[in-house]
Length: 378
Image (tube, rainbow, N blue to C red; front, side):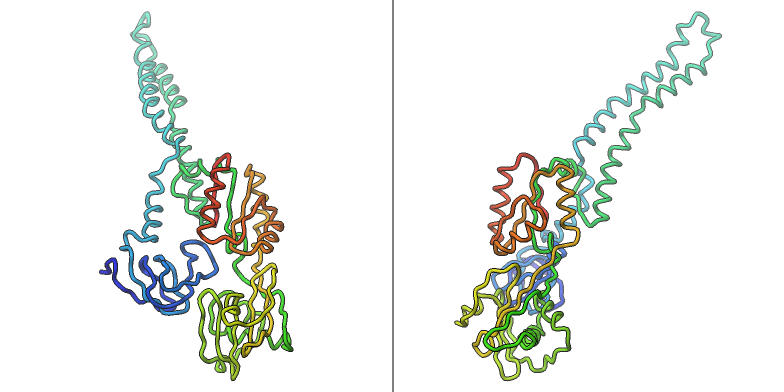
């Protein structure tokens, strides 16, 4: 069995079996099973990964930090198994009420059946069936079975209905908490947006044509599984001769470098071009920017945007109709992208250019300011 501190090798396409820390290798990991985030996460040595994530591109050497029983996926399974044990306050009250009320009703029914005939003037001529019938009527109309059955069944139906829609509710008590929510905080990518990128603009520079720039980008991105790379290949729409691509290298958090034919091509973000000392345009647009350079000459940029989910606008409106007073979006994108998305969705507020730890601080601030319960969706 694998113990804490052991080293495991995870190849592309394999699922990470245990929580751990990356010792060697750079890759993209699919975290959708744990977080719902459709965009792969770039990982490198020193970063933590969780059981259930799927390795997509590079070979990873991982040092395990937890046993399976303590891993993230095991905790999720435990939550599912223990969901029925967490009762709402209404359920608890009805159960306590029934334990006291039911014996009283049974005692009164027995009293109606037995006591009146004993005090009649002529007990021998008393219609005992009449009093037994009255006792049964009292028992039926006073029995709390309806409450005892219907209230837990209502919560059970709510939990079951949520499960059918892919929502895991840990117990009926959280349905009561959800009913008190007046502020909802959203992550952006993959939650409000589709997490599926689309090329919206191609801007060539220094004598390069649009078609040539897109063809070069499609070739250099031909070995990548990242959604941005896939969107560029989709926009190109033709077969790609990847045999011309040599010395392919993915630079985590920056982009790609490869030799296409006899040309050294770089495709990536501002940080990559700054690192290679390549002069380029600095732009502030609604979307992700992929800069391209050929033999250290800036060739242009491709703008890629993530589209809103078709039902995102209606979801925000529905929340307003049921009494949610404030909707907030948290994102790592720049302010212009965040502002555009927030305006399209009709959100109350947004926070942009946030790192993961900044999002935690933002939620804590919202919790302090909120009048009711706060829900986070992401």
